[in-house]
Each structure stands twice: as structure tokens, then as C-alpha cells.
Amino acid sequence: MSGAGGRLSEASYTVETEHDILRLEAKGDWSIASVTLLDADLRRLAEPRPGLREVVIDLSALIRLDTSGAFVLDRTAAQFQSHGLRPRFEGMREEHRLLIDKVAELQSPPAVRAEPVPAFEEILERIGATVRKFGQEALSLLEFLGAVVSALGEVIRSPRKLRLVPLVHHMEKAGFDALPLICLLTFLIGAVIAQQGAAQLKQFGADIFTVNLITIIFMREVGLLLTAIIVAGRSGSAFTAEIGSMKMREEIDAMRTLGLDPMQMLILPRILALIVVLPLLTFVADIMGLIGGGLVATLQLGMSPEVYIERMRDAAVFWTFGVGILRAPFMALAIGLIGCRAGLDVTGSAESVGTQTTRSVVMSIFLVIVLDALFAMFFTAVGL
Image (cartoon, rainbow, N blue to C red; front, side, top):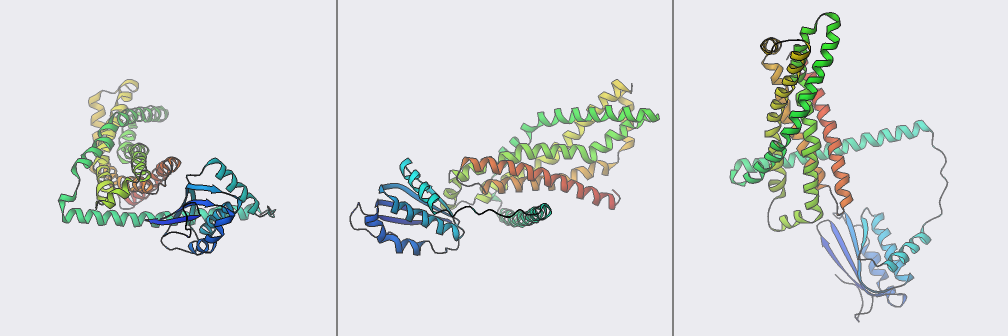
């Protein structure tokens, strides 16, 4: 689609639609002599357009721009914005930017002094906005989960669609490469819990029950929770950054153009890799935590390794270990969903990658703790 203009130097424009982005390229001489011919067309162009999210106004092909042309461009961008589309200028020279900014300032209405809002109303408003945003995020996450389950169903019906090489690659990155950090941290946390527990229980002459404390708390809670938080901060953020960078470079759009499904190529291997490796990492974390606690029990309580293992065996039953491992796949699913979805929400800027990465880590850790609390209450209620 193109605007009016007979000679090459006269004002004209072209319009293209790419997915949910409308691209408007201004060309020629956008001065008062010719830009008035485009005024009616641009007003119709800025009418509501369902299915679009962003408008890119490209000024790289402009030959000349005066105040009238800057006014028309700024007004068109404002009209798009009033209909819910986000306008963005590209290819703008410095003199054009200064002129458009000045026109925008002159069109801005004078500042109105707002009356002070009572503090409790402002607090309630923020709470309501937070609750609404949380509900929207939950619905969006459920929708994304449905898309993942649908892609998994297609892979089950046709196993050849499963990308084994990316799956193994992400299992190595999220699992094997995380082992040194998880082993070190859980060993130290196990030693700290044993040392602090022994110091407190010794006051009551019950320091022998330090082994029970270490065994139960690590197998049921700390081993899994600490591992999930490390994976959320390490692998979840990596998923967001990787997919976000691909989204920013339009590689995902290129995949769709080639007939490839990004859900099967990018999302499913990452989520399945986490579901497989997180229980294994949790098992290693439990072992390292118990070793750290055993070292402190040997050095501080004078307990032999044989006695420590015997007391540990008496303190734990199968479900002491089972309730921790059973929760691991669900936490892995939550971390993978949030990390991958945040990557797909990245827009066309490097700043957006950083923002979404931070958001994915915060949301993943929050959801991991919420799931841990819910599962703990459930297992306690059923007597496990």
C-alpha cells in the first residue's frame, strides 16, 4: 500500500504488515507543500486495527522534513497509540528527532495539578493492580502450559518430532554443568544446619538427634528447595536470555517461515530436560547435604561414620526421601514454563532481554516456594 505522490521527491509512504507489527515507511519531501495531500489517508490509516500490537514508523527514506511533516507524523503516532498500538520511530536522523520532539512538546497539554490521594486509597489501588496482574499472569501461564501439552501430544503421536540432540544438550547444560555449584552449596548448608542444630540440641542433652534433624529436613525440604532455586536462577534465566535473543533477532519468525514449530524446536526440549535432571540433581543434593552434616557430626559430636549412617537409617523411611523427589518434576515444569515464556515475551530491544530475564528468575523462585509450601501441606495432611 502506498500514499499519494507523483514525483520521487514528493511525500509518500508505504505500509506493510509483518505478523502483529505494522510498518509505515515515510519517503520523499514531507514539507508543507506536499504533506497535506497525505493528511486524509494517514487519518484513515490510523483507525483501529485488530490483531496488531506495534507500529514502526521508518524515516530513513525521508529527503526533507519541516514542522508540518513533523506534526503529521507525531499526530499519526499519537492516533495509533490511542487505539492501543505501540508506536516506534526508526531510521530517524538527529535533526528529525529534534523537530518531532519539539512538535510533541508543543502539542502536549499543560500539566494539571492532581489533588492528593489518601494514602490508604493508593495502597488499595496498588494491591488491586497487583492482584489483577497476578491473575493475568496465571491465566497466561496456563495458556502456555496448554500449548506445551499440545506439542507434547504431537511428539508422543510421532516420536520422530522429538529433538534428541537439543534435549541432551540442555540436560547437560542444566544438569551436569550445575553439579559443582549444587554439590558445594548443599554440602555447606548441610554442615551449617548440623552445626547450628547440634549447638541448640546440646543444651537439652539431645545432640544425638542432630542426625534426625539433618536427615529429615534435607530429604524432605532443603535439598529440593535449594536445588530448585539454583536451577531457577541459573537455567531458567539462561532459557529466557537464549529465547529472548532469538526473538529479538527474529530467528523465531524465520523458523515459522520455514515451517518449523518453535514449540517443538525450542520450548519442549528445554522443559523436558529440566523435568529429567531436577530429580537427579535433588538426589545428589540430598547426598551432599547428608555428607556435610555427617562431617560436622563426626568432628563436633565425636560420632563415628557407622553410627551416623545407622542413626540416619533409623530416622528416615522411604517417604522421607520420596516426598522430596516427587515434587521435583512439578518444580522443573514451573521453572521451564516461566523461563521459556518470558523469553517469548521479549520485544525488539536488549533492555527487554534483561527485564524479562530478571522477571523470570523472580517469578520462578516465587512459584517454587509456593509449590513447596502447597506440597508440604498436602503431604502432611495425607500423613506422609
